[in-house]
Image (tube, rainbow, N blue to C red; front, side, top):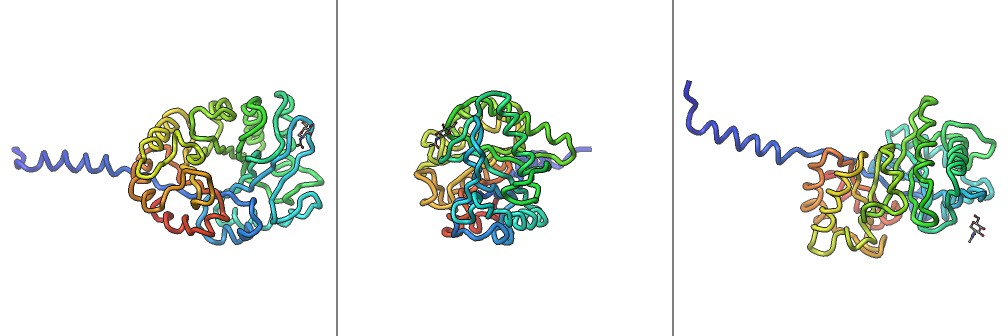
Length: 297
Ligand SMILES: *[C@@H]1O[C@H](CO)[C@@H](O)[C@H](O)[C@H]1NC(C)=O
């Protein structure tokens, strides 16, 4: 049987079209905790906008320090004032949002002094925020989904040990998610070896405050090249980490229409695409950024 003359070109163009349009759906991750005027955790999840919330930050730990969580104006954990955050955590989880404790941050005093110290910190995190037991759980008795590594200062060592130790707790039943917020220059100076363990579920790369690999007005090349480097090197779901407003970072803000027309359609072709991470809930409230992009993420 002879085909009609048009059918072969049609078949080819249809399959090219299908290939070009393969596109993955993602979710929005948000940082909450560093501004008392950004609403409670319960209000944050009740917006329905976020699939992941990182509670920021446990910014003092390791090397013999007494661990401390800092939630800015939300509550004072030094006087045991943050335990009601548990209600917010459970509400988020009931709505299908995963909640992580973010450790580190840009301001604090933290480091790991040995692999033994990494195991000690892992035990502390397990007992105080995850499935273990402690008489002084800073966020109350809710069990968080995992731990987010936002390591930006101090020593570069032993973060891989911490990742392995935390991941080991998954054997006790409930999975402990591991996430991280490396800077976009590859590979991250603090988190490179930890990410190479392959144990991280979600990696929200900070494509801001990093001129070599971020968007600059009218130019998506540096960002897209860096995105390709990350997705071809790291075996995790990769997220595009961005400031939620131009005030949220020194540089790297991407206007919502540029993101949805010139960047998301490209990065969503990657099977490792996980979505967009925003810093932070406070700035997202000011700008409405997540609302402008959500249907396209
Ligand atoms: C940071 O922690 C170390 C303990 O490892 C301590 O000696 C130092 O005083 C701390 N620095 C600040 C600024 O709190």
